[in-house]
Image (cartoon, rainbow, N blue to C red; front, side, top):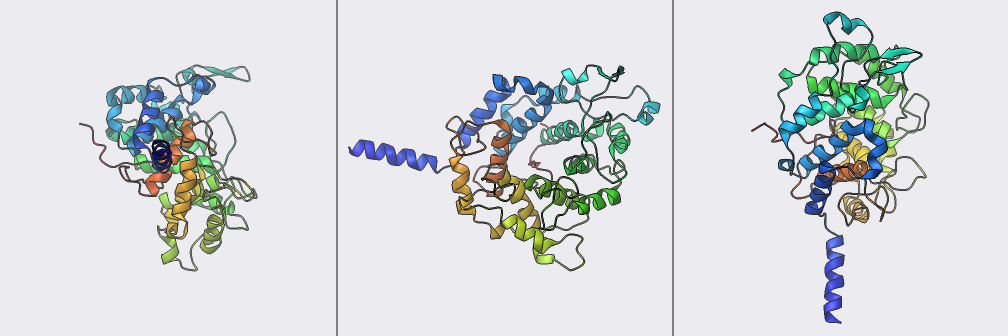
Length: 358
């Protein structure tokens, strides 16, 4: 009986710990070969690689990857214009999401040779930054010049030149791309700012488009974009002035109300807690300098109920893990200053310390 009690006590104690080694093994497995449920996401390979490689970096385990192989693969996905004149043909010369998206597609009977995407470009540049690639070797001019074609008259961005939805997600991607390249010529910041401000709702949060319900992910995209573009300072809670372009008190109240009774964060009112919003909403609070107001103990307890015995994190407690929620579980624990994890650049969503190529 004593042995059983000791075993149960040890098991319970392990459940209360962030299991870094198990998470590293989980990401290593996905780095070697993606499980079959990801077969339908072939077109998003670059995004999945971002979750794996950036996750390993947060876990301080970037030595588990072949950096040169990663660099070669990512660079192989960039779209290049044949000449300078093609930069004015309306296409976007960023990165494709996978090998298959490099094939010509057909739009209304017309062959489209370039399907590069803003989100894929964000992921590609983030990976290259993480592994310490020399950005002077990137064809950044083509990316920035052609990205201008994606910005709409209202300041929003569509993700691909053949047309798609326009919302705050792609404004954020454009802002991160510009920040990583240190080249803001591809975005009209004033128009982007006005579009973002039009998305702030009556309750303080931001919707993906003007007039839409406030959402945790959209709110992060709005606040992080404004910070990257230099329109707001960090730690706004302590520096707040009436002239601030966003309603900080209302935004702060909305964000703090998203921490539920179970300690986790919800993306919208009346929704159940979800691992990823610990980053999306928690990140906003961090940028505002208001993370001291959240209950870190109960947040940690909630996240650990989503920690899988196989490594990684699930969306909800005691479910199977996936790469998306695993990644944002790692970012959440980084913000909680878990021992052994690299610190996070909140606005970029990655850790970019100690990444010089050897």
